[in-house]
Image (cartoon, rainbow, N blue to C red; front, side):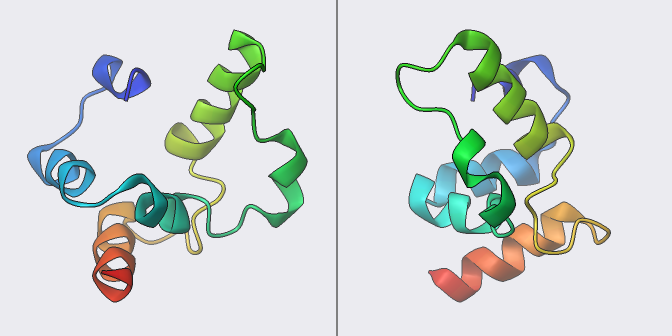
Length: 83
């Protein structure tokens, strides 16, 4: 959530983050992670590696199953499915 404090996010996205646990959120945000799995930072990774990952995941949204659609619609559909 640290990176999100710096961005403009709407109430719907905040509600999504509050409503669903991290595991369910990652199933959506990291749906297409296979090619990048080795890049996912670990607790002892550098700040640079962690920030790069956060940008790729939340800003560039490269791991979403269908990034061309509205990511809020994708999140809601997938999170309701996994609830």
